[in-house]
Structure formats: C-alpha cells, structure tokens
Length: 319
Image (cartoon, rainbow, N blue to C red; front, side, top):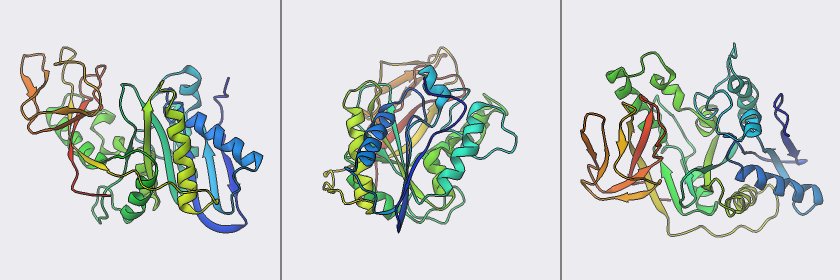
C-alpha cells in the first residue's frame, strides 16, 4: 500500500547543466498508466540502461496518494482543478498542491501522464498559441509543438483554458451553482496550466483507456521521447507521428438537471454531423451540433451546474 502522508519524487541531476524535466503520474488516482511507465523508466535509470548526462529529471509516480490508494479519481476533490498553493489548506489536494506546485516551478518542462474512462485513441493536450493576454499569457508554443510531435499520438488538442473560461461566464449567467468553485475561472487550472503560469511549459498526454494494457507502453515511450528530445540522455528519438489531427475545444456544455440525458452513449472524439442530436434537457429541449466536429469528455455522471461535454473542431494551429 502506498503511503498517503507524503509525496515521493525521484530526482536525477546531471553534473552538466541542461533542461529540467518533471514527469508526473496518477494526478487522478485511478489513472495508473503513467505510474507504471515511470516505474519502468526508473528501473532503467537505476540499472544504467538510461544515463542522465545533462540537466535534471524528476519522476513523480503518484501525485495523489490518497486517490491512488483508494483506486479512484479523487481523494477529497479533483487535484487537476484549481491547482495552486494554499496558505490555509482545507483538504488533501490543497496539501498536495503546496508540495507539488513548488516542484513544478523548479522545472522548465512538464510531461503529465493521464488516461480516460471510455475507449479511444491516445491524444496530447497542448497549451495556447503565444500571446500576451490576461487569461493564459504564453511564449513557448513552438516548444510544446515540438514535443507534442514526438510523444507518439497523432491527435493534438488545444483550447482548454479559453473554452473553460467561457463556460464559467455562462455558468455565472445561469446562476445554477452560485458561489461554488465551478464559477471560478481558476478552477480550470491544472498541472500544465500552473506550469505555464510560472514560466515553464508542458503537455498532458492522455495515454488511452484506464485499463488498456497498451496505455503504460504509450506513457513509457513518451517519457523516453521527452528525455531524448530535451537531450537529458543519449536515447534514440523516433520521428514525428505524422499525419497529425489537430483539434481545438470550441465549447463546453453543462448539465442543468439530473434528468438531462445524452441521446446515446458517447465516447470522446466520436464524430458529429451538423445538426446531429447530442442530448435532451429535462424539459425536452434538444441539443444539436451546430456544425460538424467531435464530442469530447462526455460525462454521464456530471452534476447539475458542472461540465457535461465539450465540442471540438479542427484547429487552425498545425504542428
């Protein structure tokens, strides 16, 4: 049983300066592909099969030990929402954030390893284009694109913070959950968003379905690719996974009532035709796709006033 009273990190600092990479697993406790992949890479480092020659590599196999020990997504709440240091921690995830956020800030690059519930292909979540805006100012889009191209999956998704912030505004207008964290734009800040806010950059890799036996292999290959691309060790670098399918999240739709229901069982990235029926509200109102695209992150268990599903379209940002 993994201890739940501390976080364990494995850090390897080369004598030659170079980039500082942190790799995280089990931010959600039931997403263990990254944990298993990190254990495999750790064993290779300790055996000498991988020699860290430049920079720093930090491996955090389990970021949420309470959730991991219970085999569920959350301990007290979702660690990958409203991730920020907290002067007065009130729950397990606040206490984790007070350790994890400084660790992230000490590094240049983050690779955060996740998995998902329904069947589907692995994909990469990247950040925004370079910008000087107030929501998520950023200057490392080219770095993220370069790493995204080499992680393995060919599906690349962006747009998270912008669409989440728009969803918060709509939620406030409807006043379904007044005063709750779901009406706070900071609730959209997870590991990579926090990393960007402190000057670094990073990617989320969704390695496949939770129980897919291939998911740990996807995570393992991605860690090695990141190490190789950043020059931390002399490992072979596989070529980019072309052709790429670049998508952007365009809209989040919240559940308003427990009796809101999907038109059929959906999986992430199911394609949608223009006008296709997506769901029905409790009052019988139909929700249809305004244009062709994809449904993403459909959550049949969403609570009223919270994210129910996202809509995605082809992105204008190529890799």
